Length: 255
Ligand code: GLU
Image (cartoon, rainbow, N blue to C red; front, side, top):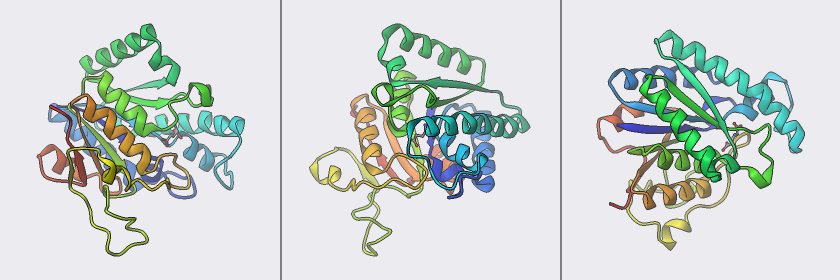
């Protein structure tokens, strides 16, 4: 299976912006094992700005663009340093790809991106992709990594996109505030009643929320790719997904 796994800031860092060691260590271990089992994996990782906040000891997520970009420059190094160290321990080589929205819209650069991605996979390396936040101002940014994950899944011809998040999946209501909220295990059509469940939100340090996840689902489903939203605090769920067990919410690609 060729699988794109997108991991959000809320999974990788604590609210302080410091690394969530338990989550990240477990995640790298499971991904290494899934690669050992023969799966082709591409990681789309957020966390640059969040980890920059931690590393620079800022009190909160910056609001202005230059400070966000400076935090991303610092945090991206920290992120890749952490991944390189942890994946190396399991014998895996990582490669960093940073893209902007305009890179993905430009036909020539998009093909270059696909070529690099495919060659890294052929060489058994693990591509780790993020938006190039240091240059991606609003007009040229993808904006959130849920959408980036979907674009990557399409570009890579993946079988599946997994969005690891701070929520277990799509619920009938906000489970943080409504005790009666029920998890929706599968979605075959993004109709109005599903889209109306999006709310807005997003976590303190991350960018996305359910809206961006449903947008990502739309992109995947239109391209015949399945997408799963699963709880990022439990990386072991990736084994269940690989075994075909029901986890979180699965959006079925149009076949
Ligand atoms: N690219 C941003 C970062 O690495 C995150 C975007 C997102 O959370 O969707 O901090």
